[in-house]
Length: 184
Image (cartoon, rainbow, N blue to C red; front, side):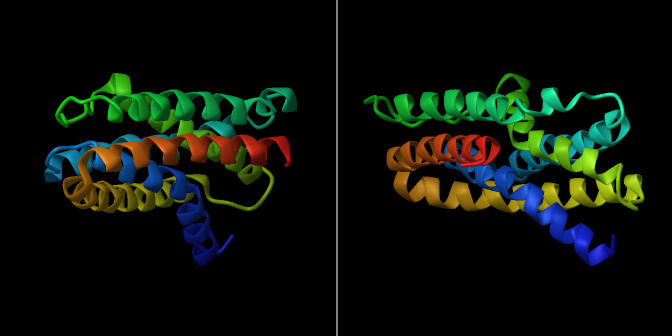
């Protein structure tokens, strides 16, 4: 696999994380560089770790386990998106969301499950796995940092409507992952 192909794979894998990072930015009252770095690190580390995990376990995983990955991603994104939608409907002032592990780990896991399948496929093609996962992680980190900033700019301007839109986007991403996983 050439470097160009690898970068394109990395960008493709990071698109769900990028969209979710925008949604996270929508929920922040004020985006600071540390917020963007934290979100980028969560998503980047998971996007790098999952293909490595898939690569290492390629010979051990029965195909039946991978058949459920889309359900896990859908459930996590739908629950978090639903909570954002419900929160946006209240009459309370906009508060900054938490970037703690309890919120970020499920998001990072849900957006990186497809990278597990890519890692399994890497085991069957000529790929230098360590440079590949490093590339995926760095591309995801950078795109997610930009996504948080974009979401923060939009969120300040549109407040409650932005949180509602962010929740809807998360649910739609989850539905799209489910649709793709079911082959529809």
